[in-house]
Structures are given as C-alpha cells and as structure tokens.
Image (cartoon, rainbow, N blue to C red; front, top):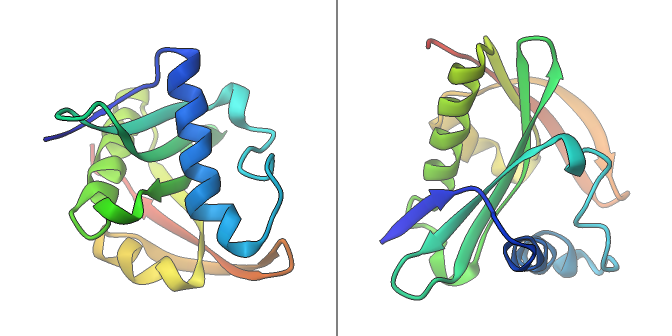
Length: 147
C-alpha cells in the first residue's frame, strides 16, 4: 500500500532528493544539485512511501507563491511505480493542504509532456513560461480550488 506523508528525518530527505534527481534531472544529463531550488526551505515536502518495503517511491513539494496561491513542483514517481495513481495521490494531498491553508488557487510549472496528466487532475493551461535548463519547454497550469 502507498502512503503519502511528510519527510521526517535526514534520511527521508536524502532519499527524496535522490529520487528527484534520478527521475527529473539525471535523464537530462544535469549535475547533482539541480534537483533542488531556492524554495526548498519554505516548502512543504511530500513523499509517497510503499508501506510494505518502506521505500520512498514518489515526491512533491508545495510553497505559497503569493497570498492564496500555492505552487507545487518536483513531482517524481519511481519508474517501477509509475502509472499506478501515485502522482494523483500526491496532487490530492497537496490540494488538501492548500484547502487547509485557505488557498484559492493551486498552480504548477510543468513540462509540456505532462500537461495531459494535470488536465486530468482538473488543471488548465494558463501560459507558456519558456525553457528550463535550455532543454525543457515548460507551461504554467492552474486550478481554482473548491474547498
């Protein structure tokens, strides 16, 4: 069974960042360290844990972009666990926390290739932001929250 929770230990964070790097940055040939950004200290982090093995199989993070607007990023799911609804579970937990915090909007800057997933989660394309690392076409997507 997959459980979504917040990382609690240094080891949790070490595994979270390792998974992020493996899924999101290593395939692009980017160096270690690029899996983190300046928003880490002000973000709420989420991990998906396989309760049978204790393995961290998914990650995401959320921060308040501006008053009432949450922004999440760095959703990564281990390749062995993809297409099992774990990304949706992470988004659902992020939305739940946003509602608890009183946010009215939730957004993400995502790869063009992932827009279909976010549309299925109720997000709409709002605008193209440009390239990330000169390699990825990115798009801003938003969802109005009905809490």
